[in-house]
Length: 69
View 1 (tube, helix red, strand yellow):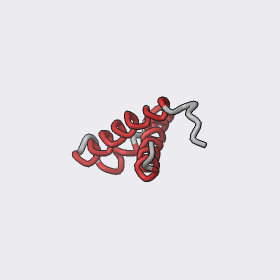
View 2 (tube, rainbow, N blue to C red; view 1 turned 60 degrees about the vertical axis):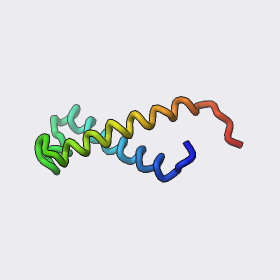
View 3 (spheres, helix red, strand yellow; view 1 turned 30 degrees about the vertical axis):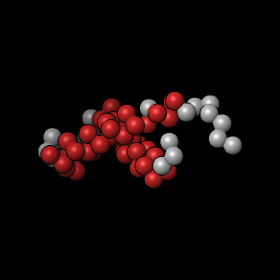
View 4 (cartoon, helix red, strand yellow; view 1 turned 30 degrees about the horizontal axis):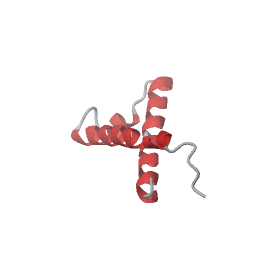
């Protein structure tokens, strides 16, 4: 995971997805659907980006314990 820009972008998108899921769980309020429409092409792109970012961030687990001194 040497690309800090990609790592930061993926982490930011995953955090947005986590906040959205928190709002859905607590208040039944889907922020993405509110902003971009219920399953519009734009909201679907946001959901796909969140999913791809989550899959990319799985690689963080592979590097846990690595010493980068």
